Amino acid sequence: MKYCIMFNMRKRIATLLTLSILCSSSYAFAGDFFQGHAEYDDRFQRPQEDLFTGKTETLEKRDVITMTVSQVLDGSFSLEGDEFFAEITSDVIGDKGVILPKGTIAHGKITETGEAKRLGRNGYLNLSFDYLTTPDGREIPIEGAMSTKLHPVKEVGKIVATDIGYTAAGGLIGGMFALQALGPAAAVASHGYTLAGGAAVGGAVGLGMSLIRKGKNVLISPGDEIKVKVLSSVELPVYKEEALKQEELFYPGLDIRISNILYEKDPFGEVNTITLSVLISNMSNRTISGMDLALVNDYNTVFNPSIFGDTKLLFSQLKPGDRYAGKISFSVHSVKGTYWLTVNDRRKNKPLAKISLDNAYKHVAESVKKHNNKIKQKKKNYYKEDDPFDME
Image (cartoon, rainbow, N blue to C red):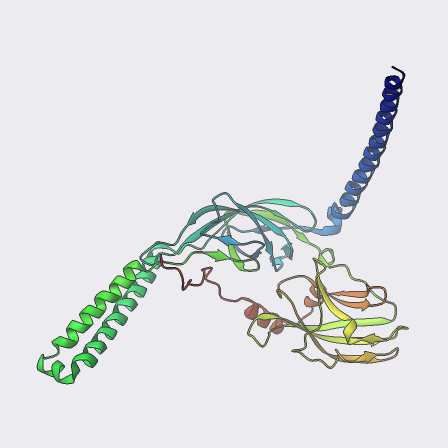
């Protein structure tokens, strides 16, 4: 009996201790939670007078916005109702200024899917968009749509043209086979009927190929650009230019200016190289090496200088009092992202300076911007490549 009483008392004491620990932990967690919430509000809920000019502009019906998708959309396994996100990769500018900044996120849904079918009919995806979330935290209702489906007349015309190509190719091959198998004499003696017969057989084979030919399924990959058509007008406030500037970090005495930003192809033909023209004046107390330079995107991914570009700065050292003017290139995942040029303190593994490419791009020559827009707009048909092992 004595041992039972002692055991129960110990059990109660242990229970009380456990409850007190849990209560104190919950209190601490709640304090951390509310502190984090306050920080979110302080950062994102900026007063409107700091962001906007006070003017408004209308995003008109039938306007087109260019975006990039963030995930794979595949017509062969994506389902109607699936949600996805896309990002606006360039400022949407009206007559009075920017109304949708770069980095605005669009929420979309797949409204209809269609798989590839026989007779060369391609699959398709219909997408709809219902709201945008701007970098300053505003949620904007919109109506937008995008489809990979061709107009029925264009689709039929495309299929007919392809099938005629198959049939014509089959007829040509059949005629050549008859000529080689039976010889020119047989063709002359039969007044050309052997060639005609061969062409007919070849044409039938070609027509059969066109009848069993299956179209392609849709594949939209992360980073692919899509064109979204606005279905209803939306009135939007105009941003102040200074409100859209990216934050930067400066080091005393180190002046870095980006005078030009050029998008280029790598040796394999991919548009994934950013070449910067920089002016560096090092009046700091540090020696800066080209190996200390890097590009960092908004996901904190680091991209080191490319060996395929100008490597003079890469292998240079800028001592206090030195100046440099030249170029440096970086290979990145996509030239459409948001980047900062950083100077790193390798001993402490942290940046000394961060210079925004978006801020510098506003002062790049219009001719360079046109070149960049042209080179980054890779033609996309959104279809999968043919699978040589697909025997369906």
